[in-house]
Image (cartoon, rainbow, N blue to C red; front, side, top):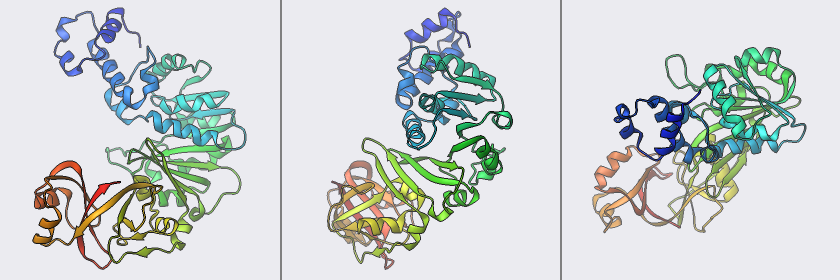
Length: 399
């Protein structure tokens, strides 16, 4: 993509402006490629929060809005790089078979002497050839080809990376590896013929347990959240002896200002003892999104010696504070059933609150309407169910 001097100047002068307003003024700038300029201005704004290293690099070209929304963030890309660099053994060569916009590749590549970006869309290859030298990746190779076709004839490497497309032909979300493109399960043997290790990024919508049983060479799984929202599943495949599916270590991490991490196996989860509370104690714990996705429910009770409120509530309680818990911790200021008078007494003086529903037969909107509360404030409410079936409302505050 080549931009004219007028278009480049317009982008520089209006980089902070609202693209919606600029779009209405297109007629005032006949020498400017306005559609391209608006894409670049909007892309850079998104990159400032999503990919700050790219945003700080002058001259980067950005794709249309949808591609920017779907691409990896810098924080998750850096985490992938840490996963790869943390493994023993050769780490000289890498091929990314599903290059896309190249965010993940740009953070993986510096850890290798040779890095190959493969992408079947020519326009993305052109963008990569422009962007990578600006990011200091001048020695990488950009190959315009279908990743599966390239896999058939590529040389042996140390690592392969794939980010399969996660929607079916009708735009629906997929839950199984076989529904993704390319189908990693069908390619598993060939992938490991070509590389000693394979890192696969999967959607958080996919069934992790099913994935661990579908693929036969998984040595580690990572469930990655950012600021409390589950973003992706990562599977590491390797040659040689591998653990059984139920013994694969699953690392649940929440990437935020302070990273929460918890590792367990399905077998440990099945064997862990789990205690249930008769009533809420002094503190309430809500696991981070990665733990909820991975299903580390009994393990949390066992490891942290805390009680679960109900099998399906996925909330925990204890008399002592546990700041190291991988999730949110609250002080319980009171709780009650849903009788009109007890709720009124519990919420006396409260006009707004943050409301969470866990294992409760109503939606957030329905409960909020019933309680007549606005959103926000310093109070945190949890509508949930105790182990004996009682429906309760917990009033909490952040510690």
